[in-house]
Length: 615
Image 1 (cartoon, rainbow, N blue to C red):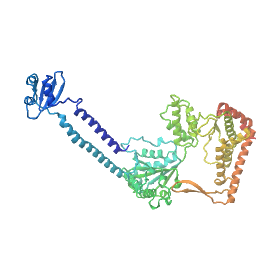
Image 2 (tube, rainbow, N blue to C red; image 1 turned 90 degrees about the vertical axis):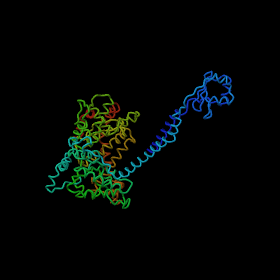
Image 3 (spheres, helix red, strand yellow; image 1 turned 135 degrees about the horizontal axis):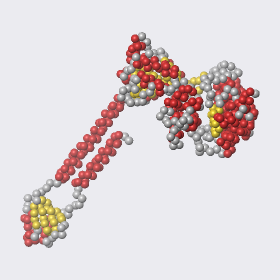
């Protein structure tokens, strides 16, 4: 609600309450019976009046039946003389008890008008104007704060944030070694300055989302024990021209005052994209903000003790001026953790959780290839949630394995019930994937097969690499395409037709085959890369591909993709026809059990795999 409207309603409520109180005090609960002097004479003559009390000009009358009334007399005139002049019966008047008491002035008779019409309006209007003035002052302060940097401060005294050090960051050994020098400079700057050395002014952390760029930056601040000013790149840019650059100046001024310190700019690509996009002309707010950052970074003196850390997952779209020596002259690439690092990361994120005796972080790490630190933190948290949901006192290995599938594929869709026919198709489809992967060369082992729906998938075949791979051969790609087509071929062999369940597999296989031809040079067209990708600078997003080849070459590319797909399909069909009995065995077991783990799958296929590869 608008603060002004809220205060106005508050004032109205005060007026209503005060008015109600004064109305109760000022107005009597019952109205007295007022009679005229003529009526009083008549009542006295009829011997109805018992007592008359004179209070100033007011006559308080008490009747013989104890009823009361009031009347008025003229000022300066005695009551007896007045009654005699009006013709009262003297004998009847003698029977009436007449007394006199001093006139009492009613306090509320003069205090109420003074309060209602004098003091109360002054109080109400005074409060109202005081509120307006206070809001005007706060509005003025907000106007001046508009150009202040909205940086969050960590690491300084008085800021009780959780302190993070390199011990809290598992893996990233090379990155931490690079940053140790930064920490040492912040702790002992004179050692470097005495040698005439210049520490890098800017350090750019590059890596995929979730690998730990922000966490590593905070660890640097924790190790150096210096103020850490964190701000997102998007927080600089506003709709008003000049606000972003003003906030940059304020941020750097604040950092210099608390030097030695660290400025951390997260998502640098939000303001650091290539300039000259042609959008917004010379007053493009984003470009002005970037220009101010460039100026501030180049304006550092060696003795300031302020270092800038920045993080991005799109270094390819950054302006070259940011990456030149003197600005972000050190680039640290953060890779996804390997199996040993994943094990250590899981141990860190499992601290404080009651773990069962069967928890095996090594097995969990082996089942999570390609997972980043954020993914692994999510796995540990999901495992704890699953255990708590089942009212368990410890988190067992079963919860960790289920959490992996939940993070990878989504939660189980127990309400997604397949019909008997659909269940049979899904079972043979997944069995086809598993068998082709098993009997094709250079493939990953099958860990689990399931026809329980998760996320958008009606079923899934989980493969986990036995070792970390950085490069892949054409044989491996062909085997992977054949595995993707295994479900399609299994449906065709078993039921004589295909379903829409293979649509995602076909899309992925086609995309991979086209990359083999156009990007990896793994076709008869030779080691040539076809197509130039274009990006819009101000969007930082791939939107189209510029052809650098003729229509004739395009036809040959399509032919090569067709050859690869048809060849992989033929390989998948050969494997499935050769092991059709195993296809039926695995399919029937899946229909019955819905899930087959690695050990059971290996027991089903037995020695067939070894015999097949020997032949």
